[in-house]
Amino acid sequence: MPDEPAFGTFFLPGPTEVRHEVLAAMTGPMIGHRGAAFEALYARVHTGLQQVFRTSRPVYVSTSSATGFMEAGVRNAPPGPILAVVNGAFSERFADIARGCGREVAELEVPWGDVVEAEAVAAQLAVRPFSAVTVVHSETSTGALTDIRAVSAAVRAHGALCLVDSVTGLAGAPIETESWELDFLLTGSQKALAIPPGLAFASVSERYLAGVTRAEARGRYFDILEFERYAAKQQTPNTPAISLLYALDVQLAAIAREGVEARWARHAAMAARTHAWVEEAAAATGIALGILAPVGARSPTVTAVTLPNGITGTEVVRAVAARGFVIGDGYGQVKDRTFRIGHMGDHSVEGLERCLAACGDALDALARGHT
Ligand SMILES: *Cc1c(COP(=O)(O)O)cnc(C)c1O
Image: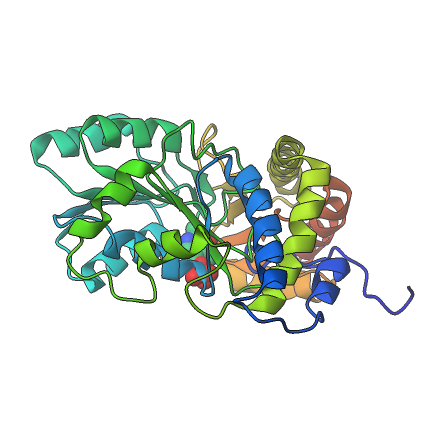
């Protein structure tokens, strides 16, 4: 179809580029959300979500952005202080949400770009009890990937609940909800799942669910007991974004065809290519580029590239845009000294290669004082 725009120019770390087939699915007709057609749709996407979450437990579907389920995770947790692991803008947001929900919050902060080790979390939990720990799997502002399996095991060993934001992790980075016994795992639709923004997904452990009735003010829209009750009927508590569920249905079928593990491998390959390109581009342009996250703790879905003084992320993004590709500028505290490439969703190494070539050309022009 000649009038479809070619896929592969949008490398923002969220929202990510959506394939035409997925966008087109959203033009399907409206159906009632309390009827058989909806229940069949729900059942289908639910099976697909369980495969991506790697769990046999329910996966809840919320018509909200991912932040909604970050708030749900906190609101439905039993009373008590929250320990927030902070290593970037989204983990800081998790801490802010907990404070906004009236919780006492202690922050365990490491420099942006780094990750917190499970031992450091355990040391905090040994000092005094916490109801829950918030942690971000793939910190989209820095490109750092936390070892969620180890952190969650340490949290569980101390009797607290582990609330995990895997918004740019799930469907791009390996995560095992059930076998890692993650208490609350959430993601959004517009990152590695590569459908448009507007849906959030979460799965909770039995341990988490057992504590929900003790929460002091669950509210209504994000009451996990409501999600649990309706999930059993293949429904959502309120009117869902039906059009987005059509997109999700098509996308989950594509993910099943690719295979979740193959999807992880494709993301790992895109990250490896990006890391190698940073070195190549530094050598070619003479610009002292680097990668913010340390080796061994880099996200397969997003890379924050560091810049020397004299060039800002905004300038790089603008020069790359002039060459036909969209990448992200820096975020929060590292806004000026980084730019970010989102290599997630349905992109391929070949498509990424074209984006990296445009980035290299843009950097070369900046190094020579042109744009
Ligand atoms: C994008 C993002 C969020 C917020 O998602 P919204 O859908 O905008 O609410 C939260 N955490 C991480 C790690 C993200 O990348």
